[in-house]
Amino acid sequence: MRRCVIPRSSMILPRQLPRTSRHTLQRPLTSLSKPFKPNLHPSRRPQTHTPCHVVLSSSTYTIVGVALCTALLGAVTVIYQKPQPASTHPFPGSETEELKTSEEMAAVAGTPQPGRPGNLTAEQELKLKEFWSTLLHIFGVSDPADVSNGDADSINSQARTNVAGAEKKKSKKRGLFGRKTNADTGVDGVAEGDDKYGQVKEFHTLLDKQSPEELRKAFWSMVKHDNPDGLLLRFLRARKWNVQNALVMLMATIHWRLEEVKVDVEIVKRGEGGALEDSKSADAAVKREGVDFLTQMRMGKSFLHGTDKEGRPMCFVRVRLHKQGEQTETSLERYTVYTIETARLLLSGNVDTACIVFDMTDFSMANMDYAPVKFMIKCFEANYPESLGVVLVHKSPWIFNAVWKIIKGWLDPVVASKVHFTRNLDELAEFVALDHIPHEEGGKDPWTYNYVGPVSGENAKMDNDDFREKLMEGRRKVVREYEAVTQHWMHSTGSSEVVERRKALTEELRAGYWELDPYVRARTFYDRTGMIRFGGGVQFYPPTETQAAPMANGGAIPAGHTDDGVD
Image 1 (cartoon, helix red, strand yellow):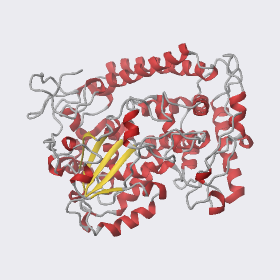
Image 2 (cartoon, one colour):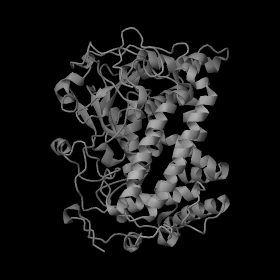
Image 3 (tube, rainbow, N blue to C red):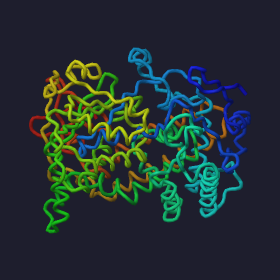
């Protein structure tokens, strides 16, 4: 096995790949009759490098969350993550690597970044296969090549044993999921196994409450239009390619979506139309929540519009519009998750991260609200991994310096070091082209945010239960075939036929979701104005005058808005 050597400049001694990885790479995957089994025994858990110059990449969520938190609006965290260069690290593509320049990014435009579908090393692909094998076992999906498949209880028991074994091993060294000392890591930081958000407990709770089939259903509901491999790779990168840690993180996220926030059945399904109904409720508490949610939408506390120089969709947050105590904590959290889930719909292809711009014009301490900041940091550090490309803090006044010192102390040092403050238009233009900067920010884009609220009948398709079930059944068939082909892929040695079939099924899943979308997701402002298109297209900028103006994705185009007519 070839040795992986870290450069001496990184101040890390050369080390070989983990024993588990060496063993796995040497084992042939030539026979479909020989099952691919992940190394689940606690004594054979993959060992991961903890370079002295990095900290957990999962803290990317911290930035994403703060960025999209239109409620917290004053407390800003900023990352500027440029593309990754080739690395001697065995698992390049994590946020701990050296960053590429914009010129290098342009040189490889149109190609996936490292650690993404279509750009995986041999070691990374093996980790992805191991992750899929573990998940499909937990979901109770029978592997035709594995004659030892057990029932649901034995599958869940095995998963628990793996996590328990990992916990026991860690506890011998420094206490259960404790912090590493400088002697352990070479830096001050959170250990990779840190469980400060109680995700191991959520992992066990989920297995207690949900059957394998319910877990499987929840996972595919979370996938939506994403590439399934791409979704799993987010969790693997966030956990430094440690499959066991990535599994805990993913399952805890499913628990969070199902039990705590009810993302798909409440926030996404009801949306702005549901908030409008709540605002008319006779129940004072329900009415307050609906009014507060819509107030934030109407004022444009935050909005999604345009792309930066790297093609990433942008979220603008107007900090001055938030005042502490004006909206309930629940409505702030609901609005934040709603914004993030909507922003997910704008990510596609090789653009899998977003750009956040915090407009700090006229910021005062009345805009500062620490509670939502902490909620966002917790929420996105744990449940939305690897989603942010760059966040910019624009025109922050001197009084924000004290606030930033507090926020910075909550962040991973590596993440905090990537914060970018832009003081004027010229500095903002280093990241965003002038014609993509809205006029109110001093740019040349004439677009302005004018909220268009829900209209009667825009969600009528959601009442068509029969047709929705027909579409759902079609999607389930594609899912079953995808799982079966994935099992063959796990045992193959790179069969082009299997690989191409998985790609085709991935596209079927994407297209199938967008056909199903109007039946499971309430229309948003961005659907009404034609920004989110039929079939998942995105149109940020006005079409030419010669183009027609048909219906927006599920509803009529409001006055003053146009659509380019692309299905």
